[in-house]
Amino acid sequence: MGEASEEKGTASQIAVLGAGSWGTALAIQLARTSRRTVLWGRNRDHLAALAAQRRNTRYLPEAAFPDALVVEPDLARALRGSRDVIVAVPSHALRATLQAAAPLLPDRARIAWATKGFELDTGLLPHQVAREVLGERIPLAVISGPTFAREVGAGLPTAMTVASSDSQFAAELAFSLSGLNFRAYTSDDVIGVEVGGATKNVLAIGAGISDGLGYGANTRVALITRGLVEMTRLGVALGARKETFMGLAGLGDLVLTCTDDQSRNRRFGLELAAGRDVEAAQRSIGQVVEGVMAARSVREVARRLNVEMPISEQVYRVIYEGVAPQDAVKELMSRTLKPESI
Image (cartoon, rainbow, N blue to C red; front, top):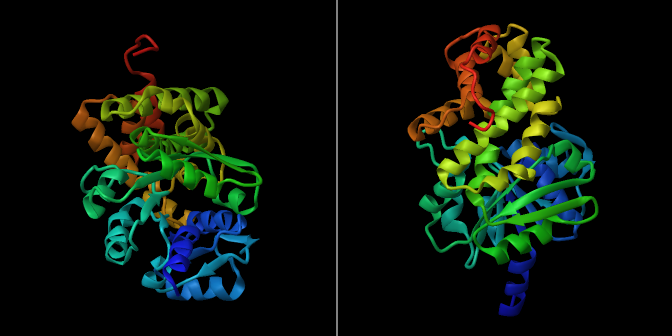
């Protein structure tokens, strides 16, 4: 193959690393635009089933794969010819996935991720992990916003955010994702978009607990509103812009995960309110509940920065200290009264 053909292939192909529900949904959406999309995952048996059935029967059984979607079990082959790479793995697997991919990346590669949450051991945001692994040369971006994988797979109208300090990468990735019923907006506030994704899962557990206890709509709305304050406080302390949290990756994602039972984190909170312990609740969900680890990492980062996050603190105490959900709510309601703006 000549140099011109190699360059054309590099520009037109995109790889998605992570064949869970969200990685599969992103791959389907990218392939809908007729862009050749390569989907890779660690479990070869799972990938073989995807290739044979041309759908992810475990997570998105109703979403057929477009012709442009190729399942590839070999990481080196998945990355060969893919200038743009999207990593869609849980936060605890981000570093290892980037480390595995780094020596295999083609020249001029650009990396994005749909991973949400601080790294547990370090308290780093995903872009900081990526910089540690990949260095300063590779353009980076984060994909986030109010999206459920099942609805993206079904082609229902959806909007989300692509954030990067490289405006060309953000614009081109947003264009690649956008199509009929899917709209991607761009931002340069990577920290704000990442903090929104890191904290909303913790707050969604709180919303699930509240609804599971039968506290009603008033309580849910109060929790979402004050949760948004907590999210914004932490983001601003880390260098984000306040207005980012009024958008899709902040308020939008928070409302989505707190109010719809497609959210694993919300369902996990419902399980806790029903009296199940943490292990039993996680088994009932059957997938990774990102908010469980996020509750710990968000608390540690907030304490390091001296940021007050009382809802997140109580969610942490329910999960890690065995505090009864009812007692956590009582603790929140008995806090000293103060102006809303504080």
